[in-house]
Amino acid sequence: MCFFVHKKKRLGISIRIMIPFGSFRIGRVYGISIEVNYTWFIIFGLVTAALAFAYFPTVYPGLSVGVSLIMGIVTSIIFFGSVLLHELMHSIVAIRNGMKVQKITLFIFGGVSQLSDEPQTPGVEFKMAIAGPATSLVLGVVFGFLAYGSAVIGLSPAFFGPFVWLGIINILLAAFNLVPCFPLDGGRVLRAALWAGFKDIKKATRVASRFGQGFAYFLIIAGLVFIFSGLLDGLWLILIGWFLNNAAQGSYQQLILRETLRGVDVAQVMKKDVDSMPAKTRLKDAVNNFFLKSNKGLYPVVRQKSNEVVGMVKINDVQSVPQDEWQDKEVSEVSKPFPGEKKIQPEQGVIDALTQMSQTKNENLLVVSGDNHLEGKINRLDIMRLIKIKSRLKK
Image 1 (cartoon, helix red, strand yellow):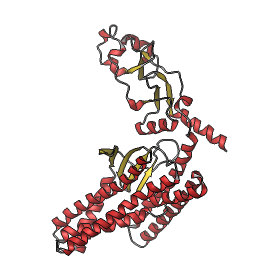
Image 2: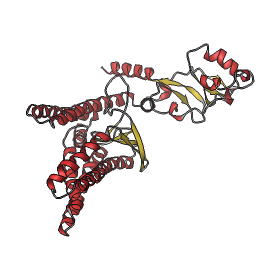
Image 3: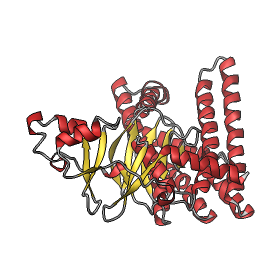
């Protein structure tokens, strides 16, 4: 399965496709960070084992165990490369239509492209959605021709066998993703059509999400029937159905949230009173007048006249200096650069701030203008309060 989503975290409501555990980056393609979630190794191992010890030995019984294992590993790698290419095509179309793609993550249920915003028109939505299945379909045909051609010229099943499976699985992947189950690609195509008809993305998303939930419940029921019939494969259907149901609900809630915060920038929500520390503060005064008098473990360090942020200081930075030097050294001498992930500009949207907080697990951000001038701070609770107020006003 492949998705493209707008990811947010820790909002008190479920508004995202849940990807458990952590991920690690393996590179960048087309400016997009490519990550692998640790759950991916589970499905990679299962696919490899199924191919090496069940599929290939059954279809091509003359192969040795070693050859089947190599075929299984190579085929799995190419297959997940196909899934990645499927996601890349979604992302490339998005980029060419003015959207930002932050990353692509491979995980146990397929791939996820993380976008910065919703498509602006039904046409863009359709092109983005159809790009993935079209890619899988083309790959399926290409692998099919390779399988046929290599078999015709008499090559070993060890060579053409993987192409046969890859051709079939990519065509099935394209077909499954075209099921009108939001937020699968087919669900996105359905939403694009509904959006064009209703002229209302909210209504289109609500209807498409209900189709997605209906299909998810169908998978769960089918899975239960399989299990009661003695087929443990039904467990996968239940897991996929549960996952799709959460994704469908979360995608709709996410759109509502984005619409609620649309047009609101950081400057409108931030608080201007920020506890900061002058750059020329002696370390002794930093301890006595700041750290000991508050429960804060970190202060932005600013130039007093210009209010320019020059870095940040933690109590650990002060403790690293011998106490007999605290009277002579200034905070600016031990401060560290203020990381970009903890800063945001006042003209940026509140939704950008929320995204940044989610990705970096920060509860608040320092608001700094383009010339590094300290403007204020914004925290998650203020944003949540704004969401509640705006939601009530719309009722």
